[in-house]
Length: 300
Image (cartoon, rainbow, N blue to C red; front, side, top):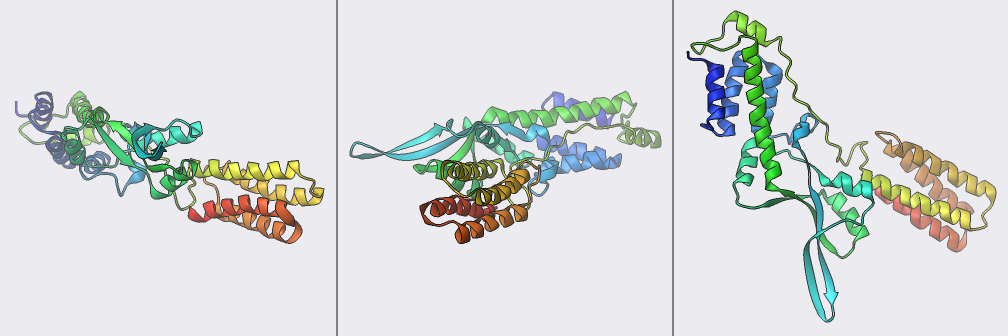
C-alpha cells in the first residue's frame, strides 16, 4: 500500500532522509490536510524563530554554563584565563543567564552539530555583558557554553514530534493511500489536537520588560540608600519623603512588567529632593546611588 503517512514514518525510522527533508515532506502533507497550526510550527523549525520569539518551544530552551575570559597579573606577567566558570554572582542572576533560547533554523543546528566541536558558545546581549563587567571588571568577555549533544536533542525532539504526529494521524484512519487524502481524512485531521508547547523566553531587554539582572542592581542601590538613611542623623520628614519614592520603585520591581517611566519619575524626584534639601557628604553619597539607578533605567 502506497501511503504518504507510512512512507514518512518509514523514512524517519530508516534515517533515509535528513531532518530538513523530513520536515519538508511533513509540510507538504500538513499543507494538503490544511493544518495551519502544524504548518506554522514546521515553517518555524525550517526558517528559525528569530522573528518569532514568542513562539519558541520549551524544548529549545537549553541550560548552559556561564563562563568568562579574564586578564590578570601574575607577578610581572600578564596572564589570560579562558573559559572560567562564573559562580559568584547572585544565584538568581546566574540561573537566569544559564538558560539559552535557541532560535536557529533546524539546518543551522545540524551544521553546528556536524562541526566536530564538543561545545558551542552563545554570546550575551551587550547591555547584559556590560552589567556583568561592572561586577567583574577584569573580565574580557562573558558567554554561555553548551555541549553539542544538547543541540542534538533539539533535532531529535523535532524528529520525534513528526513521528508522534504520523502515529496520531494513523489512529484517526488518516493514511493518504495512493498519495491522496479523502475528504473524510481531511475532516478527521482537523479534529486532532497537536501539543507543541510554546514558551515566551524571559531574557529580553527593552520596552517595559526589565531583566532580572537589572532588578537586582536597582535593588542593591536602593538598599545602599536605605542604609545611609538609617546610619545617619537625617530629619525624619526628609527620610520619609525619600522612602516614599523607594517604595514606589520597589513596588514596580515586584510586577511582572515594571513601568520604567514610573521608576524614572520616582528616581528623578528623589534626586531633585536630595539636591535641594540635603547637603554635604551624605547628599553626595545618596546622589551616587540615585544616579546609578537613573542610569540603569535609561539604559533599558
